[in-house]
Length: 402
Ligand SMILES: Cc1cc2nc3c(=O)[nH]c(=O)nc-3n(C[C@H](O)[C@H](O)[C@H](O)COP(=O)(O)OP(=O)(O)OC[C@H]3O[C@@H](n4cnc5c(N)ncnc54)[C@H](O)[C@@H]3O)c2cc1C
Image (cartoon, rainbow, N blue to C red; front, side):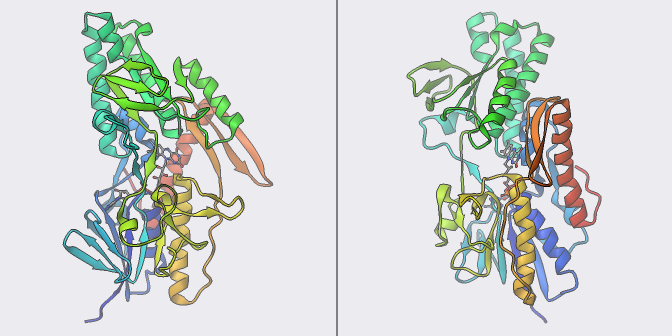
């Protein structure tokens, strides 16, 4: 029996799923190759919408079988526990899968930076399960606060601390502010008793974005009565307090931690070269240094922007671009085509500030930009999210529903 050559993609997030679908399309007539996709979950998570799920319980997962149906893709549900780069195999516990080519797209996970008590007593927002836990916690807390007889108790219940003023922290805080306003009204709670506080270690929020753009967003955030504490770190957490680097101690039942990401230990353990935050070092074609048959993309790859010499940020739009590029590069490697280097394209940035408000910009031809504020911005945000579903549809040739 003919043994097929396996092209294995690990991680069915933005980067991995895009790579697997494009590979399946490119290799559809080459039956000697088999595409494999591995993920610990049987669904693709729309991670950029997790803050909505955490507050409004919206659906942010799409079953993998709907996306890959009738494609040349074998899906493996499992936790990748080891990559043997030298022997070209990945392991899911005792089960192994040999590869001819490998694409590593395992994304990132929360980084608690060993802050005492933070892991045990805060909520990360990285997975669909995290979002559900937050939804449940906040729903119960608001309901309990409504009937708590003592004001001090109510204030503690309704003081929400968000650790980290990056994109996910800001989008979550804004959704929460809208929700709290609604909840207060429904439960007849005094609005003065609700406090949403963003603790940001840097000098201002959204430090990775353009400063004037970030300032614009900050203005909108303050209008929503969200407090921002810049230049301050969370240094300790107990079940009911948060200690700040300023020495201040706040009493609260809720800390949502969006303050940092890191990469899994898998790559480091397999001997690949690791850079900042544990990201895998890749060359200009996104190949793992020293391993020509292994590519790494998305959050877990340290791709460099050749124009700025800066690392490409961990963002869905870059993971998608990289997924498409590596599929083409694997195909080129195998069939003697021209491998293409990665040039990141920042197509725009949109920050959702609640259900009907967003601030953003989109790149236009000739280095021009168009900015959107308010409801128009939120329509743009929805359009970008829908575009991802549309592109999955196009790659898979199927109508995908959540
Ligand atoms: C709340 C939030 C909001 C965000 N908003 C935006 C935004 O507006 N715009 C933007 O560009 N970016 C945003 N991001 C960042 C964006 O989501 C990530 O950059 C993007 O998901 C990275 O894609 P990826 O393919 O590298 O990894 P992911 O999409 O994280 O996919 C990784 C996949 O690997 C799987 N996996 C991980 N480890 C294993 C293992 N050991 N075994 C098996 N499977 C495994 C996971 O289950 C997952 O399916 C946001 C992130 C968060 C958390």
